[in-house]
Every structure is written in C-alpha cells, then in structure tokens.
Image (cartoon, rainbow, N blue to C red; front, side, top):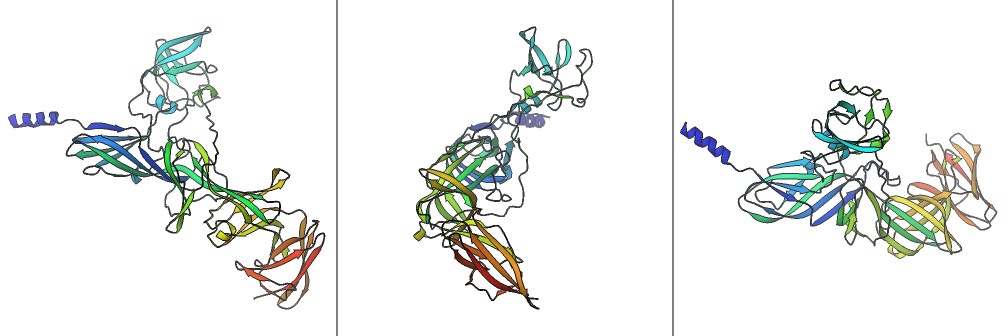
Length: 497
C-alpha cells in the first residue's frame, strides 16, 4: 500500500507541460505557385484562390527544460499542418497540432452554446441589456433564454444583439500551429518553420505601348500577387514560380474556411416565453441581413521594382529583390520587366481550316533576345496593347503573352482586324487534290503585312502561287498587301489518303 501511495504521489507531482508562445516570426519568405488548374490568362478570382504558397518563417523561442508546448501564432490560416517542418528544436518534435477554430462571429456564437451572454436590444426607444444564456447553434434562429423565458434574437429589424463577457476556450485570435517537445535543458533557440498553405495565386500582366514609328514598343510587365488568407506577412522575401509542379491533392476547403460571418434566421412565428427549449430550428421563412456584413477589400496596385529570374529545375523562379508585404485578403503588383524600344513587327494573320479562312487578327511579333532588349524567360500572361494618339495612349486590344523561353519568337494577338479581310473559295479539283484561292483585301491607306497559316489544313499543300515557309509545324504564306489593294494565293491540297 505504501508503494502504491508513493506511486500515486509521484503521478500527481509530475509538472504539467509548459506553454510558450511565439507571437510572430522575425523573418519570413513567401514563395507563391499559381493555381495548377487555372489558365494563366484567365482572371484571378480573389474570393476563391486555389494556388498555394511555401512559407518559411524564422522565430526565436525561449524554451524551458522539460516538456513544452510551443505555440507558433500568426501562421497562414490555410496552412496544411501535415506539410509543416520544424528545425532547430532540441530533441525534435513529438506532436503537431493546428488550432483551426479562429475567433469570428460564427465561431464565437457556436462556442457560446449553453454559456452566458448579454442580450442588448431596443425597447421603447431605449437600449436595454439583460442576462441571457445561448440555447441554439449558429445555423438557423438564435435562441436565448432570459429570466422571462426563451426568445429569438435579431428578429425585429436588427434591434437585437449579443454581447459576450469573455472568449470561450478553444478559440484563437490568430491561426496557430502548436508543437510538443522535450528539452533536456532551458535554451534559447532559433527555429525555422516551413509549411505549405492554400489560398494564394499569381499571374503575369504585360503592357505594350507602341511607339510612333509603328515598329517598336515600350514593354512593361508585372507580377500580380494575390492572397485570400487572413494572415499578413510583412516585409517578406517574396518569390513566384512559373511552371506547373505536380500535385496530387486539391484545396481541402471552400471560401470562409478561417471562420466566418454570423448569419441568423428568424422563425416563422415568435416563440412563446413559456415553452421549453426548442428542437432544431424550423424551416427558415425570413432572412435577417443585419446580422451579416460583407467585407470588400480594395486591392492596392503599385510598381515596386524589377524582379530577377532564377532557374528552379525545369521551372523558373522570379524573385522580388527587396522585402515586400504579402498582405491578407489583398492583391498587389510588382514590376519584373521594364524595357523601351523593343523591335515589334506588326502584321495580320488568318488560320485556314479545310479551305475556310478564320478571322483576321492583328499580331505583334518580336524575338525574346537581348538584342531585342528582352532575353529573359517570359511567363504566360495577359497583354494589353496601347497606341499613342497625340499625348494620350489609347487601348487598341488585349491578348495573351505566350510563355516563351529565351531565344524564342514571341507573338501577341492584339485584336480582330476590321480593315483587312480574307476570302477563300474552292477552284478546280482532281482525283486526289482540291484547289483553293485565297484573296486578302486591305482597306487601309498604307500597306500591311499579312500571313496565312496553312498548317491546319487536312492534307499536304502543293502548287502554291506564292512563297511559303515553315514555322512551328505550319506552312505560312507571308505577303505585303498594298494600300487599298489585294493579294491572291492559289494552292492545292493533296489528299494524303
């Protein structure tokens, strides 16, 4: 019995694990990967960003001897805790936990079930407060119990409100990752925390302004950074990765994952004060908009500086050369290319398919070389083209910048042409061929360059009346169409079958 008592005393005497909080990192790096399922030229949906980021934080923590739980506060709300790696701790990590319930109107009410609150409402043009106990969950009607019985809150044009005397346990004001460790002695450690988080994205945006000579342009390019996470990362070393790393899983949540608004509904009729606590709320008949609040965050767009490009295996990494803030629920732009006088060939083009000519498009073409004042990897993105009219640049079209490596030709489709048209019609035919005539007409008071793309034809091109050349697996017919004139191409398609 004595041994048993001593054993029990020993159990009681074991001290509880110490709690150590790290409120914020001293240094942070954010590397953003764009949504693998989103085309680089489509719009960013800031309400539902499905890209992700690799976040690396450096923190200094004072650790006592023995068992300790370290709380890393202020991590990304979209953290994937299974991806977290912690280095610099003595004896490593025994356990990782994500405190996922964040403080918000919805979670505050949900955690208040059965707990006291203060019901504040207007009675006879006076604000009256009374003690209440929350008796329902956050979905449906908000039912509270007062001295006079049960009542539904906020069913009278928003005149009811709940005031909470304290924050219920289990709620965090900041997203928090906690780790349990065993330390043989008290130390001060510099810890590196790295993890993946959803809710980020980026894209490239290009602005080309044609010069008066019509043969060159000034080219500005931006990296747009977007975050739908509720955590800000101030003074972060920021990078974006161009390419598509392989990932097997998808974002495991929908919008509003880090807490949310409290949307209450009224019942079809007021509850009698003498009835017992109700069952789950009846079907909702009315909606109380006063309990919800839409938060609109205006994105801040500004030029920062020129980003640098680095190789990352088969991918490209664009590094912002100074620290910048990746702010919560926001969007900003960082310049990564600013060059003037880039040689640009302006021409018109049309793709043929089965003898039918497609729309005529205005295209800008240059080569991604240092001789052309480029010579950097260009990520896929949207492109806006402006033409000066006096001292004012005027938008003439929007297209896409294809992702091109150094040394490749760059072609930007700008707009559909209105002054250059093309017609194609069948002529003669044989047993294994069919003839076509292509006529290009130019209504401009100046000559234009035109290229017909014949590579989509279902057969082999033969007997062309003009000179053709091969590019990207397609036969092309280049021609200069005179002012207010036309040009004609006769050719045959050989049936390969």
